[in-house]
Image (cartoon, rainbow over all chains, first blue to last red; front, side, top):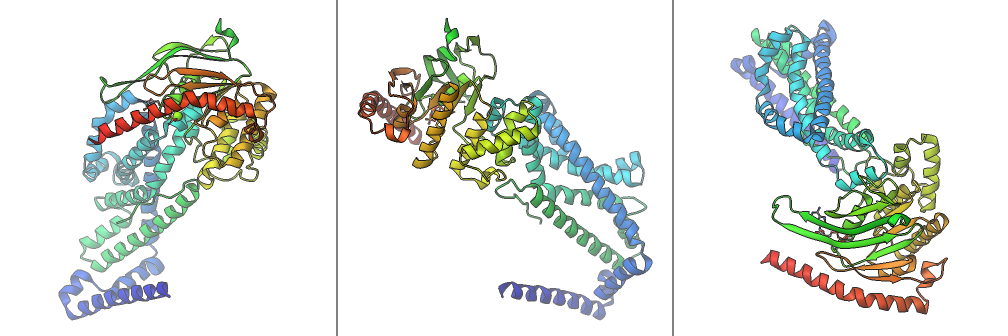
Length: 259
Length: 276
Ligand SMILES: Nc1ncnc2c1ncn2[C@@H]1O[C@H](COP(=O)(O)OP(=O)(O)OP(=O)(O)O)[C@@H](O)[C@H]1O
Ligand SMILES: [Mg+2]
């Protein structure tokens, strides 16, 4: 009953927003220019997905970039995080550099990456990797450091060698932290890919938006935003599912709020 | 000379240095000598915070004493005590492994094949009364169940020396007596050396060949040693009714009571100092 009411309100809200949008664009040409209108945006979406069909290629590129960046960033973060967490001295030496790199706004690297890797997929992946890497790295580092001393002592008493400890104690503990930051890191991979495309590319949804903007095609810009938002939602749902499966051993799943 | 002992701590002292403030020291254990013969069951009782776990950590090779030597079956201990199994006071199961996987972890570390290890593990879980709980994660088990999984995890390796730190304090009376009897049976079968820490004097007397009373900290050391000449095999529930048991109990309690009171006063003082 309560849930049903909630849905009714939500649908009502969507209708109100869309009709206000439509109405204002019909009343003012200025508004029509800057905001387009929902019907045009919907028409654009339909033509992208069912008539021109070129959106699939762009979306595919963006998703491949996201996936590559996510996988590469996670593996790098995991390796470096494990290594540094288990080597006190290396960690102490690298600490200020890592802090500086993390503090640096990564978007400014986009032109350099474009120079190094060209305007293809590689430069976008590189940018997104720099975003994903630090999230995973800091979580792995924390995860290894947080292993309870009793748990470690117990494993050692049971005869665990260095490799056993890594595989059965440090890695699972680190992974639990990585999984709990999965939402953020996948989101970051996506953001990195789109921003990279937006700053210079020949394909991808970011490129599509850039093109549309260049020709004052506001409805395509909005249509692109809708596509990206839906994609992000789908990714987030998939991550939530994966997390639930992989973290069954945890009493509570530490989900991060998406703002 | 010590070679006859399974585990021997001689003239052990242990001083902790505060990490934030190196000038601040705390001597937990001082001049302690403790010998356990193969096949002997020794219990250590003492007021809380006196240094019982510290002593056990030293015997396990997890903590290096500030001075003194530890020998295991005549050999000087360096690093981890490989012949010992240690059941910790705090929860030490791997939360990401199911009960069975926790129990067989030690076997796998030692290179036992998985099917054989699993078979052993299932038998051991049944032995500690957890048959059918193989696929539960630690957080799905009660505190007492986790203790029993930990016991199976330690004992499945069949160690020569068993170190136990208040292993049964989280169990209800019935389960506790079952586990105690199980431990006694296992011990008498294989004649292991057991160093058993407890704050329950009844438990210490019921199980042991010898009960050692530690002074309250700082600088704890044994202040009393009582051979327990009750007949074996014992049933921990029945033995408490024997007159000799009561006699021993009051004799040991006379010594322990003063220490517990001293320990209590010290703790209270520390707390008061901190709150002032
Ligand atoms: N790593 C450490 N650094 C500093 N002090 C420590 C450390 N470990 C233990 N201590 C101190 O040594 C003393 C003995 O600790 P221990 O854990 O051995 O007590 P215990 O006899 O096992 O107590 P309980 O019966 O409550 O388990 C305590 O006062 C404790 O504060
Ligand atoms: Mg203790």
